[in-house]
Image (cartoon, protein in one colour):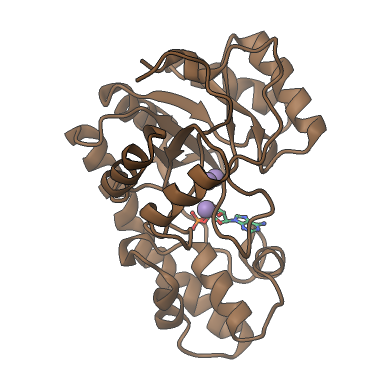
Length: 283
Ligand code: AMP
Ligand code: MN
Ligand code: MN
Ligand code: MN
């Protein structure tokens, strides 16, 4: 891999192997067309798109980083850890992700039952499944797309705020991986652990500090500073925390779909210049 500084890195996005809508090949082509020159595919809890993504990226001459976004439970909240530059063939990581995916199907069935009950509708599980490119990876996003298709909401974002977030009628509590386990799988697979979109969590300042501290003590090295999920002021906040904790900073759109995602691939502000970029760790 070339050591020159990338001009437009994008280290977080989703294909239809998780809850994006484009196949890995089409996603790679879109990233390249948007000027991305260092690209990671980071599907939720799943490595199945990496081979196709790498093949197309290499064909286009775009540097590729194999990644995955791991769902973790911290207290009662879900936290996402992006793992970059992992070995997709490592059995420890493969087994760990398999365990996470195994819990998704029952959760999806419970979610479907809760939505059917609340809304007085039918066929929600089968309907959501039709939106999933990968039946092992049914996500809230697929339910959101179904409710938009049925005219219950205008946009997926509205489905989340009305039905699919904690305290709302279609939300099902779920136990994901522990932070310790996720970090041990990432270390085993030779990857770099990055806290995804820290501005999205609902921790107090003390809880957030404790999370970053524990993440660091478990070998976590990076934090997303510039992401499609952060406002400019959140980017400033996490730039400061990156410096305080000595974390490498990452940049990623979290792109899911042309019709849904506000932030397209590569369309992000640059990282603040005083931060150490996470791509300095890639060799
Ligand atoms: P799951 O892993 O099944 O809990 O689904 C989580 C996914 O839902 C995230 O990765 C996002 O793609 C999507 N999501 C979460 N909150 C929202 C929201 N407020 N609006 C739109 N999409 C969301
Ligand atoms: Mn997602
Ligand atoms: Mn996420
Ligand atoms: Mn994501």
